[in-house]
Length: 74
Image 1 (cartoon, rainbow, N blue to C red):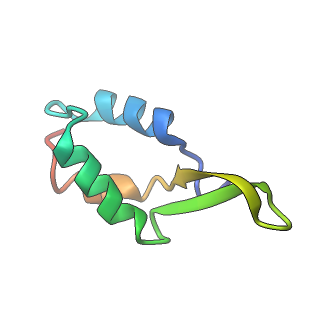
Image 2: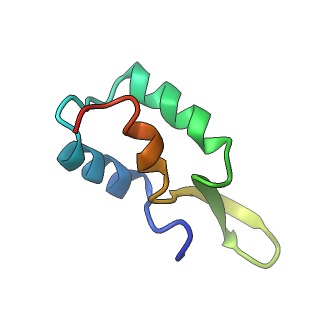
């Protein structure tokens, strides 16, 4: 949880507050998908953490904002 403290809703909420030109659109989803491939920015947690089974959910590192900074205005 320390490495990936943000879930999707908290990521979007922080982005709305941080960036003037942020809109949830195709640009955002395509950037997010690209960043999700890098373990530095995104990780998955499973319902059963030991067996790694069940539903998984993606969580995001605060480091992802450094990449979004390159595409959105503060």
